[in-house]
Length: 258
Image (tube, rainbow, N blue to C red; front, top):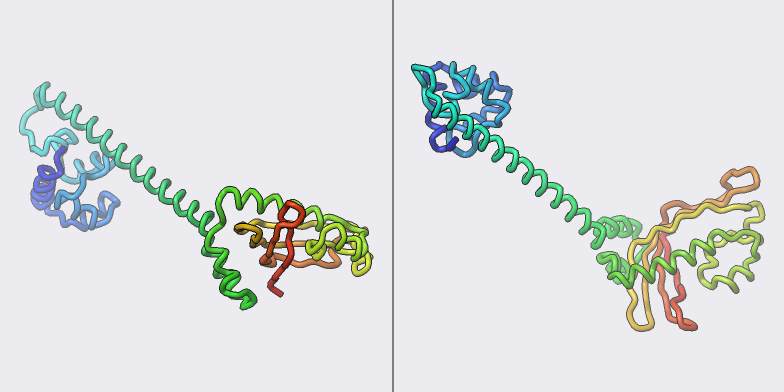
């Protein structure tokens, strides 16, 4: 069914039936704009609407497909041609519908990937704290390449291990974990804490030469023997500065939102 042939036929038949575009649209459950597009040859009706459209125009589906009003019964050759045209139209519409869905899915995946690689939404999140310097925030524009992310997640595991410790004094924690002892609930200051639940979420990492930086988001809860939370902090953005020490990256500075 050729849209250029179908368009004038539809308009003429609609007019003959005394229907406005809006009246026809209402009968079919579509918008007036959709009927207008059909009559301008911009697109064809959905195959599911053809039977209702034919009834509204007092036509058979075959007449509608053939864009002709038949006075007599359709010859066998015409029936075969209309059937073939119906099949081709159905396949064409299904293909276009599939392609539209595929394009939308690919666009969605692209957007999600861009947000993962270039987490601009994080920038707004930390900018609002008015805590961090511009050069620190700029490290959030790019998540980091594969090696940066891999190394950053290794360091994150060390931080989570430090945060899980209980019963250490402040001195012991500093000796074992260095700057990361900040995340240890030491027995000196938190004698009631016997267990810790923590989550260190990776945001970005950048390593160059002997210096590196990381962005993480931290949630921690220290619980007493009864399982009650006695201390903690939640969803705290943190900027870590790292240096090579003894052959591996170590966190040497921490800047956190209050």
